[in-house]
Every structure is written in structure tokens, then in C-alpha cells.
Amino acid sequence: MTQVTKEQVLDALRGVDSGTGGLDVAARGWVQDVVIKDGHVAFALEVPPDLGPKLEPVRAQAEKAVYELPGVLSATVVLTAEKKAAPSPQAKGGGGREQLALPGIKSIVAIASGKGGVGKSTTAANIAVALAKLGKSVALFDADIFGPSMPRMLGLAGKKPHSDGTKVHPLENHGVKVMSIGFMIAEDNPVIWRGPMVMGALEQMLKDVEWGDIDVMVVDMPPGTGDTQLTMSQRVPLAGAVIVSTPQDIALLDARKGLNMFRRVEVPILGMIENMSHYICPSCGHREDIFSTGGAEKTARELETDFLGGIPLDIKIRETSDSGTPIVAADPDSPHAKAYVEIAEKIAAKLADGTVKPAPTISMGA
Ligand code: ADP
Image (tube, rainbow, N blue to C red; front, top):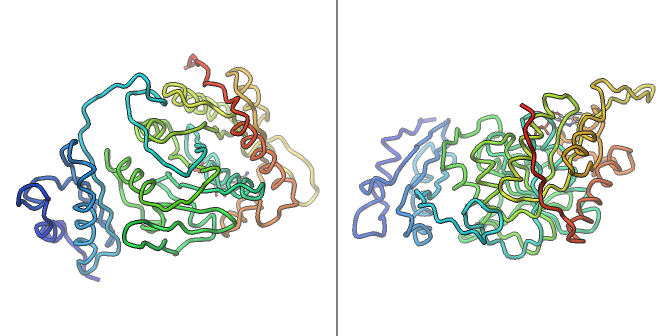
């Protein structure tokens, strides 16, 4: 296959009018951060902040122009603008950033972790399916742009959401509507996102989707507590956040960072989940606390947040999500599925009764 070059991309963009007085988007100098990887092209159009919202048609045209180049498998174009700080003390979420309006979505819950590999995505997938089992209309938004795993975990790998020209229709499986950047790019070959592109891409994905009426949207956050996570927590009107942690102390320290980040932007913490909490021997059923268990429960108490439950380390949890049917759907009567459903019930109850407490102030031990 011919490999598309940056010059070809820029050439194609010379045919896209900037909508601002005759110049094309390349001549305007708006094209930034062009990343080309195995036929997947992504870049940002850095536009003047006051024009931002008006330039959506230009963005769409730029995407189309690049997508039509031979050898291009996907084109992702995001609008970014260097925003002037405009602090608004009233804005929920703090930080002086305006929040996205997402009408039709009642509550948005972030599933977060202080670091990668703790089972955040597995937890998000199972909780989403569990909430659907409880009768909620559920959406799952995969914001883990660095390693989108929802298409695989929810049995939608290789599928593409349908677009009617204005809105994208999310894919659905196990009773959950799903949107993920993973539908646009190969999971094993993610685009390397830089700086402002990440948030631009996430916002566009959230806004361009026809979600319909949703009771709970579960957001699988990118792991960690960097700028992307912080911006995401400010821009998305989160009802609350759930922190997933493993029992090891080091991970718990990371979990504290996660809590602290949400506290800074005034997002309530719904509680903590201890994943890979203990090991149950598949042949004899014996329970083994390989990492001294209960760390998350203790930390949750110290940090004045609720402990929502522990999920054991079990190969069935990995196998089921690897094969696209999370254990809550694959084996609903298993103790593990019940553990997820119990956590989902607690989350739903907290969202319903409005007693979600503001996040506590945390002093970092290290
Ligand atoms: P993260 O989103 O935090 O990076 P993942 O959800 O992708 O983590 O999980 C990392 C790996 O651990 C995956 O292979 C997943 O199947 C596995 N895993 C997650 N939770 C469990 C569990 N409770 N028992 C066994 N395997 C698990």
C-alpha cells in the first residue's frame, strides 16, 4: 500500500477553504501536529478561539479531503484553539473552564485510576453492563485514548459506528451504547496524540454522537492524573468519579493522586473499588490474599470516601472481557458478576439520592 506523506496531506488541505477570507486552511497556518501512522492520519486545526464553533464544517471538509487520499485508512481532525483564561467562579467543576453541554445524559460517572494496568477498563465495562442489567439506559464513553480497549471488551472490535453526515450513531452491545476512538483506529496501532489534540478529539467524539436519552454514562478515563485527565474532569460535567485501585501500596498512593485530582476540580468521589483484591483458586475455591488485601478499604476510610467493593483476581474476569463478553453478561450468576452488580447498585443509589459528597481535602503523604 502506498504510504501517504505529510506533503500529500498538506496538498489536499490546500483545497479546503478556511472560510475566513479566501485562504485555505494550510495557507492560514492552522495545520498542526500532523501524525501519520500506517495509513491513519491525525492532525489539529489550530484556529482563532472566537471562530472555533463556526469552523466545524471546515474541520469536516478537511477530514474528508484527507480521508479521500489514496492509502488513507482513517482521518481524524480536531479543532483546537489557544484559549484565553476566562475564570468563571460559578462554573461547576471549577478551574475556570466551561463545561460541555450534553443534553439527554442524566449522570456521567468517571472510572479512573492513578496509573495504568489496575483493571480500570475491565471494571468500567462490567459496571456499565451491570447498570444496564439494573434497567438503566447506559452509555460507555471510552476516553482511554492512549489504549482504547472497549471495542474488544464489549465484543465490538472491527465494527464501525454509522454516521448520517451530521451525527454518529454509537454501537451497542450487552445493553450498552459504546463510543470509542478505537472504532476509528486499530487497537494495536494507536495514533500518538499530542497536547491539545487529545481533548479536542474527545470533545468532538462526545458531541458528535447521537446518544439518545441516557441515565448513566460511564467514562473509561485515561489512566493517570496528567493534563488530559484534569482537562477531561473539568470539561465533562461529571456527577462523580470512582477510583479503581489494586491492593499494593504503591498503587494506592497513585489512587490518592487520582482522588486529589478530582478534588481540585470539585468532582465528587463516589468511592473506591479494590480490583485484584484477592485470589480464588479455580480448582479448590480457596481464597488467597496474595497482596495484603483491604488496602483500598482502609485508604477509603482515611480519605473519608466510601469503599464500594472488592473484585477478586480471577482468570475468568480476564478471559471474558478479552473475548468481548464481560463476566456480568457472560456468567451473571457467578460471585464475580454479583460483586460488580452490587457496586453498580451502590453507584446508582448515590446518583439517585443526591447525597454525593464533595471530594475531601487530601494531604499527600509523599
Ligand atoms: P487498565 O484499564 O487499568 O489499564 P485493564 O482493565 O485493561 O486495565 O486490565 C489490565 C489486564 O488485567 C487485562 O488483561 C484484564 O483482563 C486483566 N484484569 C483486570 N481485572 C482483572 C481481575 N479482577 N482478574 C483478572 N484479570 C483482570
